[in-house]
Amino acid sequence: MAQTANPVFLRPVSQPEADPGKAITFSTPLTLDCGRTLSPFTIAYMTYGTLNAARSNAILICHALTGDQFAASRHPLTGKPGWWDIMVGPGKPIDTDRFFVICSNVIGGCMGSTGPASIDPKTGKPYALDFPVVTIRDMVRAQAMLIDALGIEKLLCVTGGSMGGMQVLQWAASFPDRLATAMPLATAARHSAQNIAFHEVGRQAIMADPDWNGGQYYESANPAKGLAVARMAAHITYLSEAALQRKFGRELQDRDQISFGFGADFQVESYLHHQGMTFVDRFDANSYLYITRAMDYFDLASGYKGVLADAFRDAKARFCLISFTSDWLFPTPENKRIAHALNATAANVSFVEIESDKGHDAFLLDEPEMLATVRGFLNAAAAENGIA
Amino acid sequence: MLRPDLAAIADMIAPNTRVLDIGCGDGALLEHLKQTRGVDGRGIELSQQNVNHCVARGLSVLQGDADTDLAEYPSQAFDVVILSQTIQATRSPAKVLADLLRIGKRTIVSFPNFGHWRVRLSLLVNGRMPRTRALDYPWYETPNIHLCTIRDFTEMAKDAGAEIEKALALNASGTSAIHADAPGPNLFAEGAIFLMSRRGGVAWGPTAGRAGSS
View 1 (cartoon, chains in turn yellow, brown):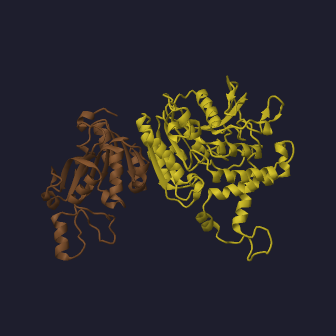
View 2 (cartoon, rainbow over the protein chains, first blue to last red):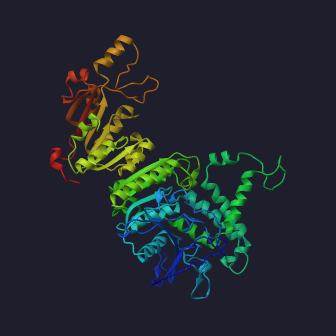
View 3 (cartoon, one colour):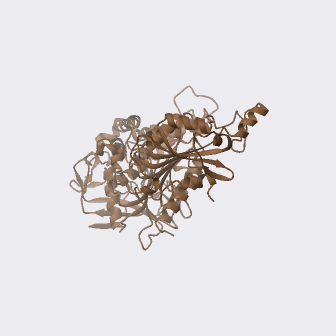
């Protein structure tokens, strides 16, 4: 049914000493919301810590739009520390000395899980735009198959921020018996009009790049400029006005005065260029199209006649929702809306709003109160579920 | 040890009921109710640090504000709703009380009594805004923007359609049952605890009879 191998990445591994993780290929077809099936399909994943004998200490981490499975270990392509290194590791809030942590690359991604850059078995060439449009629910279905393959009946916790939080909510709705706790951060039960608008700007930037070539670029040049612009625009939305002002102000980049030209006079411009350039080295432009679309399509209530509370009708998990004061991408009211829907179904839900001026990205950063909340919540979850 | 006023509130709550504690602080009462009475408890708390304490205790608490968040709660969702030592700090006490009576089949409210003789005497003698053990803030810094006496509260509760099932005087020496309309407690009680339900609301037996209802 399933076969495990080394993952195949989009770009060559530059850090041979970094753990590349594993990839599992399923021959069971994955039926998608769009009506098509994906078969065979592969999920690349990392695990940290040890699964206990009772198989009761597993925590699934769901990554955000441009994240991947390398939550707590060095990235094999970039050499950078794990994207949630502050949160996950020995002695950290998601303590890998106690918990078995799983993080998998989403379907549609480009770090080893099946996505638009993967080879279509029908043609022997990359899918490109022949790849089916996937949804958050499809990503979660695939994760559930991975959890099955790992022999885990019930997860102690499913957690993640932003798009990861959307997956957490979908888990609670789709598999209410398979998680003891759910901890979505900085997220929403539906993508807002403003967020869809930002994503569309990014997609149009990619598709306007002549190198994009209708998605057929895998044997030629990447649409690097388009993807970089998409990343630059999106990156602004991950920060806050206060954070940008504090970090850069109107400081000039390597010059004493403005140049009366269009080079990167300001530090903030140079910073964005750098963000765009480093991103194209590790990400696939078509994956960016597909994953942003999956977020746009996410509206958990839509499967329940528009009543969000009904999505959680069968939810048994204890929830902890976390938002950040300066997050304008997934603002507190969106997170609170989830809390109120859960409340209406008498679910066990906690909600915390963390004071931070770091914007949406705060969930990835050293926010002591967030780390304390997560640690406390998981300690209580472990105690309740008999985990040492 | 549970604070005496919280212990008196706990005594009013039947086992295995669903309870919402608004302004639950660090969760001491909720934890006590969960451990000793098997109560299925929820909390609302303004302070983020207090919410963290609650979450670490395994309690379900939402960071929020009684003035703005109660409207979101469905009617009759809880067996008991508690608001302890908080109503005097809300912007719209009458609206908050109406919401409590709507959300809870029963409502418990405790508050400091501004009619206590020491408060009255302090204003009379000193001619300044009273500062007492229970209300120790200068007038310009107090969070208690809507102080009331037991008589004031009784009147508002009746106007809100509340049936006062039980009233307790709260003093340093402990609690004692009072008649809400009697003048004595309004002069001699430092605080009060009211157990109420909505008049003409759902038919409702004694609390103890509802054990295991949730």
